[in-house]
Amino acid sequence: MAKNGKRILVALGGNAIKQAHEKGTAEEQFRNVYTTAKHLVNMIEHLGKDDRLIITHGNGPQAGNLALQQDIAKDVVPPQPLDVVGAMTQGQIGYMLQQCLENIMMEKGMKVPVVAIVNQVLVDKNDPEFFGENASKPVGNFLTEEEAMKMKAEKGWIVKKVKPNAPKPWRRVVPSPDPIANVEADVIKILVDSGVVVIASGGGGIPVIKEDGRLVGVEAVIDKDLAGERLAEVVEADIFLILTDVEKAKLNFGKPDEKEIDRMTVSEAKKYLAEGHFLPGSMGPKVKACIRFLEWGGKEAIITSLDKAVEALEGRTGTHIVKD
Ligand code: ADP
Ligand code: MG
Image 1 (cartoon, helix red, strand yellow):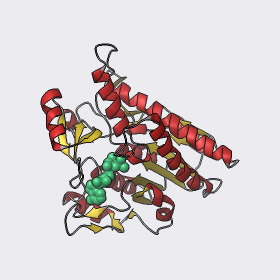
Image 2 (cartoon, protein in one colour):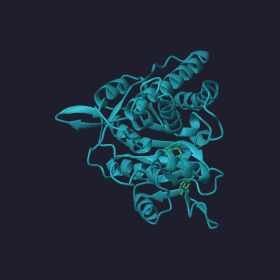
Image 3 (cartoon, helix red, strand yellow):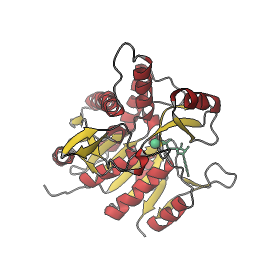
Image 4 (cartoon, rainbow, N blue to C red):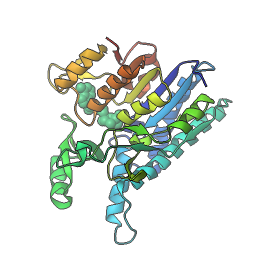
């Protein structure tokens, strides 16, 4: 089917589901997802007949908590590996998003089909992230330095400082291989073409490698923004909208001369990235994903906060990344 209208790929950050200060009860998560879904429905209402919204989301805190549950209960219930934990959180968050979107649309008398799919993403088994201390993806709760050092000593976790000015700046990091392809791409394309609001590639997708021509899950977490970019290619998105907890990306992040970026070209984004303005594991992969999206053929990439989504789409706020 040939593509007509405009397609927007929305990537939801962790705060769309769980706030940093929350424990992560089902009630808290449903409340956050409901608020998120309201913003998404607002966007869906603004779409034309041939326009499409495609949704992806993070799973860092959820996967971190679930991995912790596997560890604590290991003498009672066999612990599941990270790929299975990824699949479980896709199911959990997909369910919450799907139900909230459906409830809000029902209230408004809207009839737009929504579906969350369990989705694998292919990675390379020789990706450098699988070796040594290269692992770069933060998962789980934020930790104080003391907590981080304790987990490092007790469990052999790799821990890194990811939020310079926060009271709890540390997090566990796990291998984050580069996504190569979305395994269920064909099905997703068919659903999107036929008008379904698809939720896919959740938590960066379930990481799988190819071995002797077969798919096999691996212990890793793929960055949701980089995987979201692969999904954007699959659905032929025009706009890649990354919704996080900051309104704009900044230069000299966390320093006295910090400066918000309103607009940058691909060349500028590459230069700033190389200069280290965007931290690895958080803003770094977002900017990298935006660069890839524009180089692939996307029209515009936007980084902003969830509550500014519509304003940013209208060009009134957010960091806009455009072709040179
Ligand atoms: P998400 O769950 O939305 O993916 P992340 O925590 O991964 O959120 O990324 C957003 C965070 O990136 C911000 O809260 C901020 O702490 C961090 N960050 C790193 N570098 C920058 C930068 N240059 N400008 C703005 N935020 C940055
Ligand atoms: Mg992130």
